Length: 262
Image (cartoon, rainbow, N blue to C red):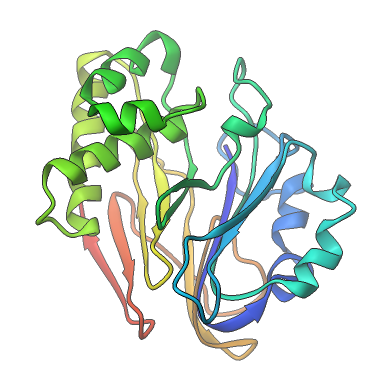
């Protein structure tokens, strides 16, 4: 299992999100509190962000090192500033390669995606069935081997087949499809996803078998006014709310937050 962090709101640097909280993502990499499997997140990390002023595709920074071993991150985090940031630390599933193609966030055009969860026995169960669902463009885009990237690819393919659907609706359809496939192939899937286009966040807390991995939100904290933060674990003492299981969380440009059941 991984640990996730997503921010949308007034522009901030990475430093107060990654380094300053008492239970920051860096602390969660070696001392997580609520992981359902694994004990540390030492198999790499990544972050993605959007330029404050320019309408460009997002930027990403990834490494296969543990986040605490990256000597460049401290200075980079003081330099990078954005109003939309996605980040994660990785606990790799046994058998998955530790290479850059498997590092999150995954990027497709203007979209970024991070995932916490897993498909049990992915290579033996849903690897081929998911790939059979992908259109040619998305199939060729997939570069790694993780269940995380394939879940995102399934969403992209289903969304392209139904361009009139919102991202929330497409995520809903994807998770129902994933649950159906998991049942057919006698496996379980959990999918805490956060997807962004730079202007909004769309997330899920989902599992075919309870409990789902943890996911919290907080809004307009005194330290981060005019902002919403989603995180696998609370970063600091404050008014954090646990997202309901099997729900979709949507954060709009004005930081309004809506939660709908799946």
